[in-house]
Length: 294
Image (cartoon, rainbow, N blue to C red):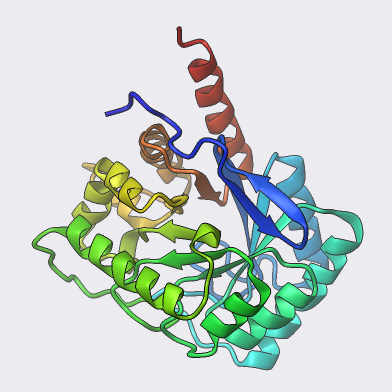
C-alpha cells in the first residue's frame, strides 16, 4: 500500500511566470477571512489579524497559502460579491508587496477569481468544481492558472449535512472527476494545470465512514495522472470513530496526522492544513524517513 510514496515526480505547476514543483509534498496553510468558517471563523476577518496570520503561516513553513472570504460549511451564510472581494483582494495585494509565496484563493465566484488572479493569486480552489458559476471556466482558461476541482455531493458553495449513501464512494468520485475533466477540456482548460481534491467530511456525506474509505483508497485517483490535494484538517469526521465520539478541535490533531500520513504515503501531493507547524513537521518527518530507504 505504501511502496511508492510520491507518484508525481517532476510535476510542475505554472502561474504568473512562477513554478511550483510537486516532486515532494506541498503544505498549504489555511487563511479564512470569514465570519463563520467552522474552525476559525471571525478570527481573521480583520485585515490586520489576517496579515498576522499570513506571516505566521509563512514562518510555520507553508509552501502555499489558501485564502478564503466565504465559508463553505453547512451552517455558513452566503457572502455577496463585494464583501468577498473586500475581504481578500487587499490581503492579496499586501502579500504580493512582500512575498512570492504561492497564493490559492478559495472561491466559487468567477469575478472573485478574476480579480484575485489579476492581483497575483496563483491557484483557484473551487469547492464546486466549476459547477456554481458558469463563467468560472472561461476565467481559468483565459489566465491559464491552476484550478482545484473538488468533489462535493452538493453543487453550491456550501455543503449540506445530508447522510447520503454510496454503493461505491470511490467509483462515484472517479466518475465525477471524469465528467469534470471532460468539461474542463471542452472549455479549453489545460489539464496539466488541474488539481483534484476528493473532498472530506460533509462534502462527501455526514456519514464519516466514507471519508475514511476515501483515505484508505485514495491512491486509486492516480489513474487521472494529476496532483491530489487533501484537506482533512480539523473536520468533524475525525472525531466520530472514537469511543468518546465527540473529539474537540485540539483532540482531532492526532487522527488528522494519521489520516494525512496515510494519504501522503499513497501519493497525495498537497496537504491543506490549519495547524501549519504540525503539517510541516509531518511532511518533513516523512521526507526524512523516505530519504533513508535503500
